[in-house]
Image 1: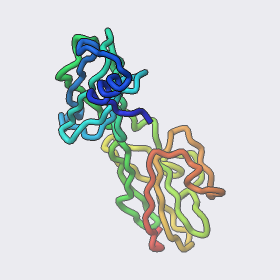
Image 2: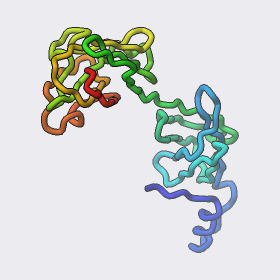
Image 3: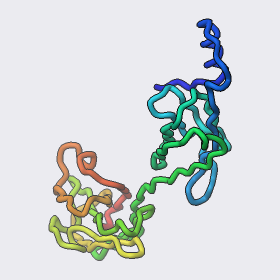
Length: 221
């Protein structure tokens, strides 16, 4: 892991080595990191000067400061879980009072909102850009003695999978076959994914999915 280096540490280390350093050899880089749309400060974001050991983290106000050796330009990278990494090149004359923005990464969520025995299973997808709806489909599995695609293992919309509608909702047909059911699962997967039924091996862990939800079936599927 890279080490944070403060101004005091830099000067102290050089003094210990018996070297004389003038203030002109170092410069200050500082600024504030905020969310792109809300302008809310982003705390604990990692701020790094790429290719050097200089780095720090933002405080609760989103503020950071790094004292580093002078160069003509610096490649700055900012990262934090839940946000898209930010990278830019700064000229030596533009290093203070920086206003930098991180864009949150949307994490899709899938929900099952209604199960009607022998009729339909409905739900909604949240946190996904509507422009990306066409890249995904919803698979529904029901657990009886094993996890089976519901209601049919067929590549037909509404029967073997559901598509996401403009308002984020989805719906699939439900067929009562007289078997006791214990759980219902809905998964958001790539439109091109071809599912297995029943599930084998490591089960859902083997299926590449963007989101999954499981609820008790209570015998009503």
